[in-house]
Structures are given as structure tokens and as C-alpha cells.
Image (cartoon, rainbow, N blue to C red; front, side, top):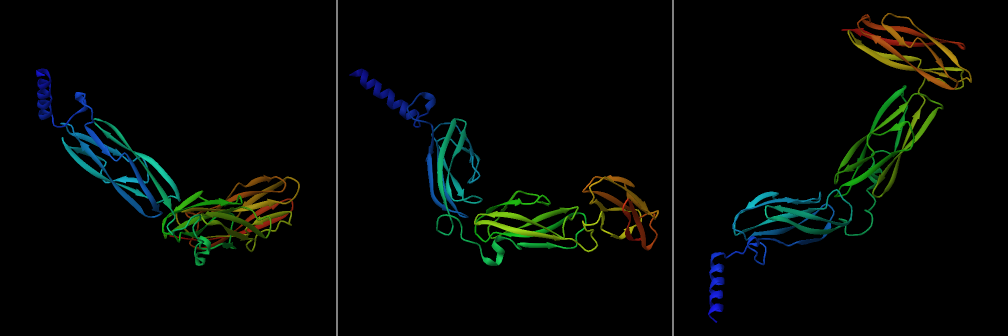
Length: 348
């Protein structure tokens, strides 16, 4: 009986000396508590957010250093690094943002690293459409041409090389959308395969058209934009400009006039023309320039059957007299001589 009373007195003294139990002494509960260990944000509409609080309790007699890693682009916390004094508690706000995403179930883990161990809080959220229904978003407003500023592009004043046109993509909804882009012809190029448009926003999208030859009077192509509500085709039509060669001739040269505009002293500028061999045999082409300020590269070339070759016309502004100047570039072939008129205006 005396032994039992003595044991109770010892336990009472220990309880008074250590009011907060610590696992370092082998006592049955942890010195750090994280509540809750599971978060259900419920249904969160796209473009909105939901928040909850996580409580962290430090029962130990030493400061608790805490680092919170959200581990997900949808999760943010008000604090990521802080210290909890001994025998204290603190709470942090955790926010789930349903942005830059699509409807569906999202889940991950928040990792809480401390100097007394690692704790994990699992979470889930169900992202739902902002308009209250299921499935795909409703069709966009008609005035936006199904999400693009124009669905038909026609190019007439075109010379060999590349031309840039820009259209605008629209997002009529209060949440971001992702649009994939796919050119359907080789002569249309895009700088990005997809874009993300912000809520109620727009995106200027450049389209690059590269053509060095016209096999027919009109070249037709399609660029497809895949919006969340469906595919939208943008048709691009390039028409042969006046003065371009016709493929019915044995040798074709285009363009037959090149205007450099103003070329300042000390400036060097280049443009190109193309010679096409429409015959089934190899053709030799010789070039003659007729002014000291004008040079053509190369001076001679062999063009394979049914093929073409680009030549560079270079203007040296230091050799170009003041005023408007004109010169001829002569192209000699077995099928006759062709002429290109080059115009430039010199001066300081």
C-alpha cells in the first residue's frame, strides 16, 4: 500500500514539473499537433477560390520552426516560414484557387516541415463550371467570330519571302481558356502551338506566311484554332500580285520591279527576286547589273527542271547618288533576256 502511494506521489510531482508532455521523454502523445490532416474544399467554381485554416500546436518546451510547402499551383498559404514559441499555437490560412484549369477533381498534399518532424495535410477539391451546368462551356458570343477577330485573311500585295499578319483571340468567359493552334499548310507558320487567354481577355496572335513561288493564281490554306467550345478555321488566301510570272512560260521572273525606297548614305539594303525554270531540262542563268551602287548575288546559277532559284539584290547607299535613281538587272537565259527595274532614292 505504501509503495502505491509513493508511486502516485512521484507521478504527481512529474506532472507538476512537466505540464506539457514531450515525445522525447517517451510519453504517449506528440509534442506537435497539426489539425486537420485532411481538407475537403468541396465544390469550387472556376474563377473563384475557397479557404480554410490549419492549426499547428507546439506542446514542447523549445521553439518550433515551420516551413509550409503548398506542393500545388492551385494552393497558396499566407505564410510559408515562421516559428511557434514553446507551449503555443498558431493557425495559417490555406487558399484553393480554381484558375487556369478545367472542371474536375483536384487533389494533392500540403507538406509541413518542422524541426520536430514532417507532417502532411491531404486535400481535395471539385472544380465546377462557373455557369452552374456541366459539360463544355456555352458557345461564345457571335460578335467575336467564334473566338477570333477574323476568319478570312486575303493577301494581295505579296513579294517573295515572309509576311506577318496578326489576329486577335477572345475569351468571353470569367475563367482562363487554353487554345491550341495548328497550321494546315506548310507555308503558314506560327510561333506558339497553344496560348492561354485570361478571363474576359484577348490575345494578339501573329501568323507568318512564307511564299517564294506561286504555282497558281491563288494559294489557299487553313489555320485551325481549337477552343474549348470547338475548332475554328481561319482561311488564308494569297493571290498572285500584278507583274508576277506565269508558270506557262519557259522561264519566269518575279517580281519585275523592285523599289527600295529611301536608302541613306552608309546604309546597305537587300531584297530578292526569283527565277523559275518551268522546263524539263537544266537551265543556266546569267545576271548583269548596270549600276555601281547595285549588285546581284550570285551572278550565275544553274536551275534544275521545274525548280526555282532566289537571287539577292543589294543596294550600297554610300555609292548611291542623291535623288531617285533607276537601274536595270538583266537575266540572260537560253529562252531569252528578262529585265528587272530597280528603283532607289539616295541621300543623307
